[in-house]
Image (cartoon, rainbow, N blue to C red):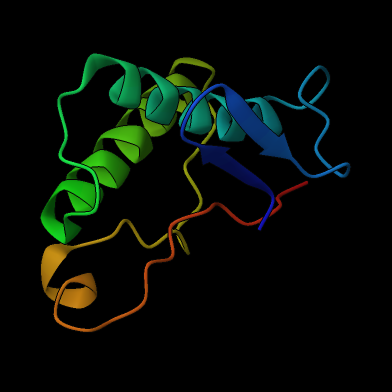
Amino acid sequence: MLAMYLHGNTIFLDDRLDVHGNDYHTSILLHELVHYVQQQSGRFREGDCDSWVKEEQEAFRVQAAWLRERTISFPQHHQIPRREHVCAGGSRSGTAPLQP
């Protein structure tokens, strides 16, 4: 895991991320900042799997749009969470892997 938002005001970033010099790494921070805004807005129910999937989907959409604006492709191996894969007993994984 390279980045994680904890409810409140804390985002953890792996030391390998260069958010000042690498646009993809910056997009990972943006993804986590989207989660901060989501929590602050109160739009999603905490602890609900469907809400978690919607939060992740929104964060990935914002991240992908930001990368597109910089003509950077969103990595093909990203698996944007889908309800049927996660809420039916699957694991909750949505953090982006490290890219050069």
